[in-house]
Length: 445
Image 1 (cartoon, rainbow, N blue to C red):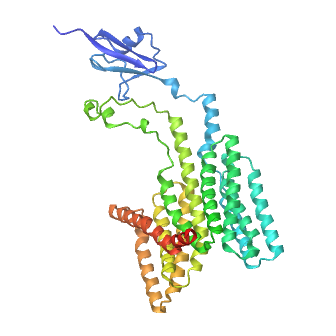
Image 2: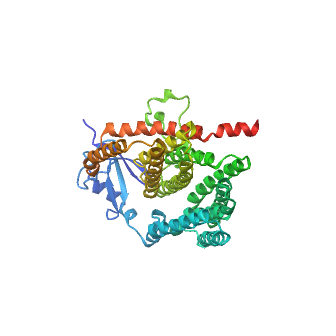
Image 3: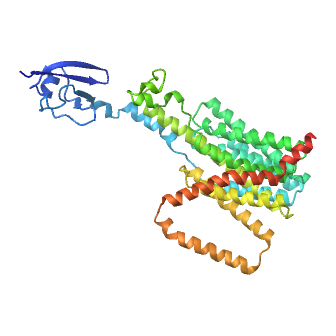
């Protein structure tokens, strides 16, 4: 005679109960006998499907099945969680004013250009005081998510002030070294403020301070070693490429012990390892979201800082490569490759500010390098016209597929291959063209 009872498990977030019940009992009867408040809890299967309370336990969940009690009140948002959501809302957005940023950058460029072209004491003094005062004003702003732009702008203003102060000496190497030292000082001060405040912007200020400080130390040593400024700016462009590549993927810190390995997933394949793997820790949604948000901030800070230094270095390195030597051709070709690399990298960058930085940097670097390369080659008017016509045809052919957001595996893989080649070849060409290796050998010989 067949058994009149079945075995099943009733579980919730607090524990589990293994029961033996009559096969013809309904789910509602079972839960009512167990004292479960059906207005608060809803029964589901392990897959998440709701269980009909009038069905018999022999049908759902069946012999050996599981009834999972889901607490409805856990999905309600109370006053406390509402306050927490409002408190954490600034962490999920970044308050930036593009017009203010563009205006500050334009004023900085104008003041720096005036100091370089007419380095009179009055012009230098006024420009330096204005830029330094703006940087100090940025530092006076409280550290918060809404004032994150100060971490990006303040070092740039301080660097411009340091460069302007030495404009009267007409030494580009001294100006670059002083500017980087001043910018690194401002960046470190901002990071110290964020560290004391203990806020999320620490993830941004730390990366910016490290990048500015490393470049400041290297350029100061190069200036003391009397290495030409053109060589150091070419090195800046070469270093910006691997920095951007690294920051795209290395910003998220994951403990290797938190990764689920194959022997844990496939329990019947324990022979793959000598010991039983450690079970993974539970995943908390808020902690994971915060970790991802901080990682995105670090990645954004590294990409923007590297792109800024590469852009400023290009504006000095490319115009100085005019002697038609092999080194000059390498600098021009490497700069053009760097511009194309930034443009291709923007395809895979999802963050808005990082993508804008790579696009703007790639477009300006490519345009400046291409113009300098054309002027150095001095091609005929017919050749230039044919090149522009060919470029127009290519852009015209790409208008429709790009407008319709067409994608293809071949197109994507081709871009990845070209990006990888530029990642390897562009820094190598820039380092060779800078002659930094020969300069270092001369210093130590």
